[in-house]
Length: 188
Image (cartoon, rainbow, N blue to C red; front, top):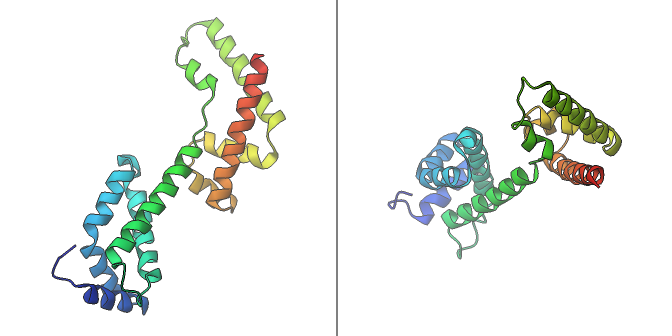
């Protein structure tokens, strides 16, 4: 942050943002760009950088709107940093919870595509997996699984199904638990 801006200057900018002054928000973004940029680089991968930068700006905007202008104990910069950190921890938890791995994924790279025996085993494994999915998951969970399997993020699945992202993450956790139980039941 530019050291020439005092807390009073920051509060003045926040007041302007709250009445719709976009230039004031642009100024706050400029002043706190090092914080925002370091948050993106610290918590995201290069592939996520653009989406995460937008999310970070949204969290920052919410911090501007929620900061208590009457209190004097906590400066806005510290408040914004805490808001960003909390949002990123939640983001990482959501992202990590959404990862579903199955033994089939690990073994598929070991088979030769030219080997008819491998093709037969792979086809049998895929059929078994599909049967387990059909037997274990609800219709909603099967739809979420299919979209996730196609490479969609929980956020995009939520938008597509008209659900909350948290609902999708919860569904993916249930799916993972059900499929792990079903796969381990098959191996016993």
